[in-house]
Amino acid sequence: MNLSQLVLASHNAGKLKELQAMLGESVQLRSIGEFSQVEPEETGLSFVENAILKARNAARISGLPALADDSGLAVDFLGGAPGIYSARYADGKGDAANNAKLLDALKDVPDAERGAQFVCVLALVRHADDPLPILCEGLWQGRILHAASGEHGFGYDPLFWVPERNVSSAELSPADKNQISHRARAMALLRQRLGLK
Image (tube, rainbow, N blue to C red; front, side, top):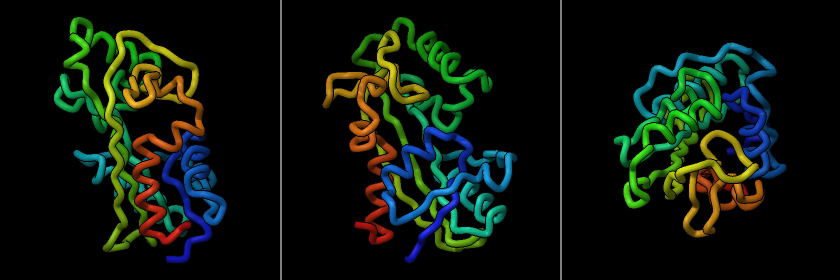
């Protein structure tokens, strides 16, 4: 599939920068914000459903092939929550409020039961009614810390302990994170599917 331009179904500048770095220079990633400020309602009950919904919406608005990322944090002790509601876990009050709510929910939970994974599903549609979206999933295993640590990243990064590096996700440099994160894993599969070197 020859794609020189893709519209990313996200207004998040951090996500745009991260995904563009992973995609490389052969594909230009444009923000849906260039075309519309309206966010589609995420009515799906899974990361897959929401990623497809967002990709179709972005393709419809922009007229370009579209890439959507639906990602979040699934905490074992909480039965997979906050899951698809990760970004709006604390009623849309932002990262700090989400992190505080998560720490509160896990207040007396021992380390052994604080397992979690970041989940990313990428959906790529060639056009709004594409009957065969390309879907790629990435999982990043770790556990939830008792307090925030680190200055990098966004979202739950300061609370997510990365065992193979012995640091929190927010203590990784952006370049390191882009090598091993859930998004990096999903993107590696997507690059493979698109035949990008």
